[in-house]
Image (cartoon, rainbow, N blue to C red; front, side, top):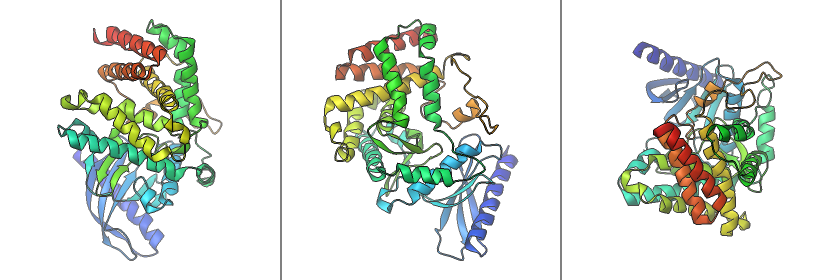
Length: 394
């Protein structure tokens, strides 16, 4: 296993050296490779620039994906990094793209250095540090959304121009959300839970936030705690694999839907307070460009709509095979098949194999909906939570 891991590291470093040498027009040498982990199918390496013919960072991060990776997902990641790299430094939400290679599925990024992971800050016992981190998270989301307002056409142009052999990739989040929503009635019946028409309409409205919505901005897509680090420059979003433009309420709802599972015992009792801090910090950055969000009812309706969708999708992912009414991996016009297992192997913060996490999400949603006066959502969330509790934890 160690030999295999070393081969992956050295292979990624060698490929990065060749790419950087071609780009610089002179030899570039990398040394002191450090394994930074990554998902099961991705190699992520930090390396020191030992020989540098041009102005270049002292260390770089190399991300290498296997050759069988769906090229459309890699294209979307490259384009996302291209887009955010073009933003002003103060608005850039994460690392800068240095170089990329479509043929070898290789990315070379600026090194964010060391810092604290959001997961560790949430699970710690320092109440003040957790509160500050959560507020910084919300502010960073809002600044990213405000900085990318109106940039959707630029992103779309980059995506169209990316690689003519591949074609334009779809938003995988939207695809899975629609599959889950189309199967809502059968999935609810499987859980022996009534699906009110108003809730079904909210799920459908949540799906429309991918392609429509009033608050369009760039999103890395997976903005959960696993993909967030705090360093000297603030909050950094570290994974853009399925980045794109969507309604920004999907992001803030994704954050509140996924952070609770990481809270320490001392912070669990403060969950509602931390949730409010996260949302309020985000709103403080975007209410100037989207004034309607100053209205609490407007904000809560959008937040609960997206939160309901994310909770439902994470639940359907846990249900038995065959829950989806349509094949989740149809053959595309270009002959490429998107493997559902490969999508989930991205390690989405939303995806969990722990039934306790899913049950807790519905409890959290029910509490938030009750506080907002959204009675039907609260009752539905409570019913789903109880059904899952009986089915999975009794």
